[in-house]
Amino acid sequence: MKYIVLLGDGMPDHPLPDHDNKTPLQIANTPNMDFLAKSGITGGIKTIPDGFPPGSDVSNLSIFGYNPEVYYTGRSPLEAASMGVDLDSGDIAFRCNLVTLKPVMNDLVMEDYSAGHISSEEAKELINFLNSKLGNENYTFYPGVSYRHLLVWKGGKEKMDLPPPHDLTGKGIKDSVLSRRDEIIELLNYSQMLLKNHAVNLKRAGEGKRPANCIWLWGSGKKPAMPNLKKMYDLEGAVISAVDLLKGIGIYAGLDAIKVPGATGYIDTNYEGKVKSALKILEEKNFVYIHLEAADETSHEGSFENKIKAIEDFDSKVVGKVLKGISGYKKYKVLLTSDHPTPLSLMTHTAEKVPFAVYSPNMNGDKTIAFSEDLIKEGSKNFEKGFEIMEYFVRG
Image (tube, rainbow, N blue to C red; front, top):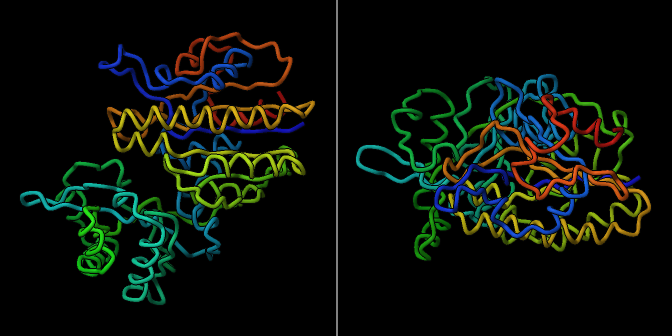
């Protein structure tokens, strides 16, 4: 039996008054996802336990089959694993975003949590520069992909991180956030002084692009201890994602983290390369987890047009191509879902349930009409403990 997880990050949304109170999933043309909903078992998943932040870290742990109440220690340790950074027991890892802050009146506004989706090459130069100036026996900066990077604080303090920057888009932060006086704020202040006139930012300004004029430290935590999926469910294979967080979960789960050239985590990602990598893995292994980030990123931007494009590209360039590619196997199962809603009206995550469809050939399905948020009420299954979805997917 082959097991394939197809996850569109942040696809679920709220009804849009300007679009007949339909959601992007209901508006987008998604014949392949609709096929899975019509032919499979459907319902809803509560991926975020009560009291947890509605992040992709918590929610994807749930989808992978891990109870966040047991295994979650923070976002950044998972990203560190993907980047090949081995944490010691006393280390605290932080996600280090490159962001754009804009002075407005007497405040600083979070203009862009991604510094205009800065390229990995530009970002690497900036992060390495910061490490040369601010790095020491306590602090080490590691470059990642686009705006997503890592800071490791040896012997650091816990619960010192800032709010997620995508939750602050368009908001003033000087009094609410930067009024703190501690090591983290000190690093932010130094980074602003160092990045302001860096050649990379001067060039970006000349090209009309947003500068990466500050770092943002959040999602901190210590190294987790997790059993692998081979032991839990007899699954062996790979995770395919542009995002270090997902690859890190996969590594702790005992999976290979496949690096696909041109995978950006945005609407310009290499869809074809991801599908080819997934199908190749399935030739020898029995499990692959394919994660697409674009719908979430476009939701954080508040872009309706780009979110529709991200959902439709996921359907045609990933879901459809994977279904065609696995059609030659006699036995396979597909889990189609998301990790959390990212409503365009809020431009951030919520903890509401997400829809899912589990499909296998010749399955007696629910015969629901289409893949959308309606499946949460219309489907036959609902998982109040999100991590139980993997048990059902593999053994149900």
